[in-house]
Amino acid sequence: MVALALIPEAISFSVIAGVDPKIGLFASVTMAVTISVVGGRRAMISAATGAVALVIGPLNREHGFGYLVAAVILAGVFQIVLGALGVAKLMRFVPRSVMVGFVNSLAVLIFLAQLPELTHVPWAVYPLLAGALAVMVGFPKLTRAVPAPLVSIVALTLLTVGAGIAVPTVGDKGELPSSLPVPGLPDVPFTLDTLTTVAPYALAMALVGLMESLMTAKLVDEITDTRSDKRREAVGQGVANIVTGFFGGMGGCAMIGQTMINVKVSGARTRVSTFLAGAFLLLLCLVFGPVVSHIPMAVLVAVMVMVSFGTFDWHSIAPATLRRLPAGELAVTAVTMVAVVATSNLAIGVVIGSLLAMAVFAKRVAHHAEVTATPAPDGTRTVYTVTGALFFASANDLTTRFDYAGDPDLVVIDLTAAHIWDASSVAALDTVRAKYAQRGKTVEITGLNHPSATLHDRLSGELATAH
View 1: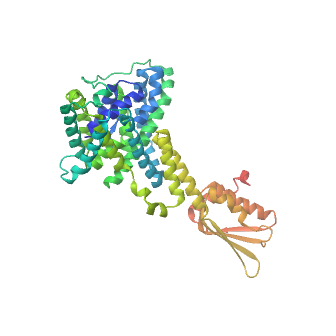
View 2: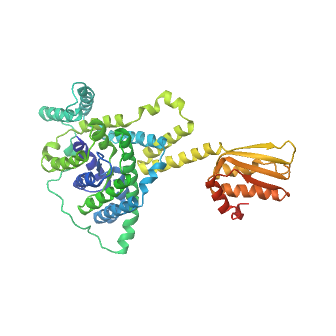
View 3: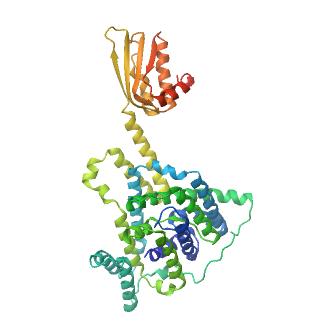
């Protein structure tokens, strides 16, 4: 099923990248087979993807196919280096609201990618689409022994061929390959000039590929209630791209749609499923190419529409959820979705969403820093009790919370219920002390926990520019 779903997508992405459809198909084969061995997330599907095609397509158009292959290989090297350096750990900083936006925007993109197949087509496409959807919804109620999408593809392909119904087919997308690719080096001059031309595209491809792959791995982790090795996955993506490059492929990364077919629809959980997706794709192209060419695109569109429907987190837009969630988190999810759909670039959406989430978090935590003044009964001192997290967002407001002119000669700042996180907080406390010193008053800081005391002792008095 996954192999069948890969065919039209790989061909479409080849068109985006400006290469022969065979390039995308073989890239999907080598990516899937290689990542099944070296990847860190079992049952996840990696192949030629639209995100990668969008990044390296301009390089192919401006400099030629050899430079594209060189960029794929170099991108793989970058991914191995980034994986070894632990870039996968950055996934901890992607909040749930961004993850929901990522998943929902992917569902929207998968759906939107099917619309071109439903415009300016013969009327017979629409009954076929409806019939395929009906089979996939109804057949599982009879049995789950055979995947409903496979039944739909076989039945409706036989119908269109037998009845001679003229509708767009997989064969109309491009010629399927008839022989195996031969490994070799990219046809480029091995010079510094070539490296400077290729490197920016390779780095962009490496980052986009890792972002999409690690986000998809995290999603599969949640669906299967299992953990994956993100570092191994990052390195594995690099190895798979290097192998794909040496076989003259266009590179790729994890594919959310085909992964959902494999994991959610088919219930796959092992590396064998990923390997077989690549192996069956090769078999379909080389041996059953003429048969596969007759599959109506309408049926494969129906499969992807069902994948889109199943991928979308409908609970996230339920009225009860919308009423309960804070406005900031809803905004983060919405902005992530809009950014991904508007740019068709998952990396941009995730980065924008994560930055907004951090800003919302900083604003929320900053409000939790409170300062309460308690004058001594005899009027000899005032104790200021500070509670909450002191960092740049809350520290900026800290200096305005003291009565410098009206307080007595001794002021105690009690930080027992607070924590100092950064240099901005130390600078703010230094400023408070300096403002009191200008009036001949003394400040005592008490209650520092060990990490806060260590940071304060190291930086206090050294941040004169902050005064």
